Image (tube, rainbow, N blue to C red):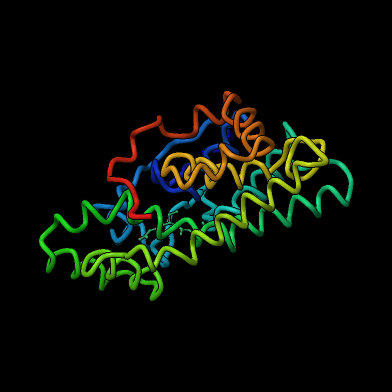
Amino acid sequence: MLAVIELYHSTHSTCSQKVRICLAEKGLAWTGHHLNLRRFDQLQPEFLALNPAGLVPVLVDSGHVLTESRIINEYLEDAYPRPRLCPEGAYARARMRLWTRYADEVATEAVKLPSFVRNIQPELQRMPRAEALAAIERMPEAGVRARWRKAATEGISAEDLKPSIARLVEMVERMDRALRDAPWLAGDEYSLADIDIAPFAQRLVRIDLFGLVAERPRVNDWYARMTSRPAYASAMPPAGSEGGQPAPV
Ligand SMILES: N[C@@H](CCC(=O)N[C@@H](CS)C(=O)NCC(=O)O)C(=O)O
């Protein structure tokens, strides 16, 4: 029987983008279920039945449900090993995993507030507040709820953004150091490390955070090689499609 891959995702969600790039690199056909997070599609009971945390992406492969973008990409590598997206050699693989863990545990959180301010807060504040807050109170995760509540009420301030921006500066500096010795983040081979970090680099470019990428030639060169890959282009939204307005930074 032919495998049927379904992806519950959102166009502008960095975690969804990671998985879409991976699927495209592997040339896998998939059926998409798009969720509009600004309209709270993630709170629909059918979606919460798949992921009680109310977060995208969710991959369903022949009936097997998987959450967490890092784990999904590792699963895709295991289940569909060609083309290979894990480098050869134990050390390069370990380096790759340091990056995929970093993307998951640090970059994902760091990019959230600047993205929110730019892409979600303006629309949220135009909604009737009671309606927005009623939806927000149904969000399963306390941290997620708190971020949405702040964006819907007093708004995320320039001061709130400072820790996130410091983490994002660290991210590009870390990339810059890795790219000093090798063309790709985990070494000589393109890998899940590059795929899992790429959406965050693109977000920095799109929200135009202090030229963080453009000012570092090695990172900028990596970004140009990344964006010229057909898989990347097919998985990422076109420039200017995020909507919203510039971040107050
Ligand atoms: N660690 C999770 C994080 C998933 C996550 O935070 N997804 C965001 C989009 S990038 C989401 O669904 N947000 C919904 C919300 O904020 O209500 C992963 O990597 O899949």
